[in-house]
Length: 384
Ligand code: ADP
Ligand code: MG
Image 1 (spheres, protein in one colour):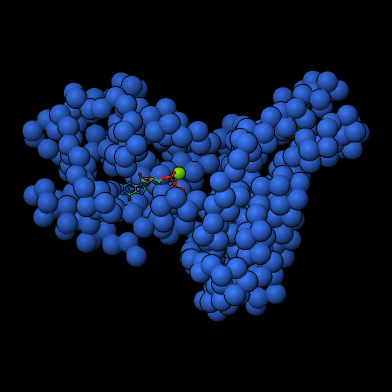
Image 2: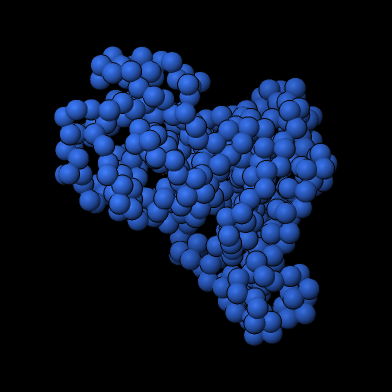
């Protein structure tokens, strides 16, 4: 796994200067899916897959970035940085530099070596890890301290405005603000957050279904429109409902018959998911793993049946985990239609759990899954 000492040596060999090394983690969302744009709650944990960034100053007025994973270097004079994306890995660090410059920071000349072991494009947010590692390293070199929530906002803007990906705040927020052995309950309305301990006896087993279904007909846009339609109808009765975050299951019971059936189901998912997410944080704080597991299972059923954002393979992966020794709870995590499931599993049973789940999934689907045993890790920081 990741080796800051090796990166330090590689950077020094390449650029002749000893660097400072920073780390920013990927993440997994334990519960709270499609609640962020309803100004609701999510509860991710940072994981021990991460991006490392080694940085040292230069004297030639250039910014040089080497991506070890791609064995590729890009270099520009400071005042000639590209102002537009090129659909290349360098968009992510350049997006950060563009946002920092736009905020009025004077960028220094530097060499930056990036390396990461967050699997790319698997829904564990390698992109946020690269962004947060870059901004932490660059501001560290500048001697500027930016609070974690602000780091998250700037990194999200880099991805939205420069890279051109319409992501929410969760990935960058947890990468910047995660804490070892904790999940983080984030209120997407005001970015206030609460840490909830994950017992040392638990592992986070992330199971990649290896499928990502291309969804046709703008499913995301349709889901969002349905959620907004339901919100609008409820707000005609209670104007204080600005987002579904403000609505309750009682509101749904009272006025749900006015909402078209699909929009009603989407709304029921979002409203109950918000409640489950807060309850899941409370369960962790009370060390009540049985309740956490039950909430995760309910969340999966709701995501699959009401939000209709699961798929056969993900439902299979969750189903096959149910009777394996050590399982606390399992659900599909991330944007949906494939990707990974997250399983909270007793740590001493996690290796056998992972082997058995891989075996069962391959027999059932013919697909060999990738299964990772992870632990909740610290947010971005400098490695001394
Ligand atoms: P994910 O779900 O992993 O965030 P994205 O498509 O959002 O998937 O981001 C993946 C992209 O991020 C990669 O294609 C690459 O351009 C960039 N990236 C991720 N990790 C690294 C890395 N270690 N070095 C350079 N670029 C990286
Ligand atoms: Mg991403």
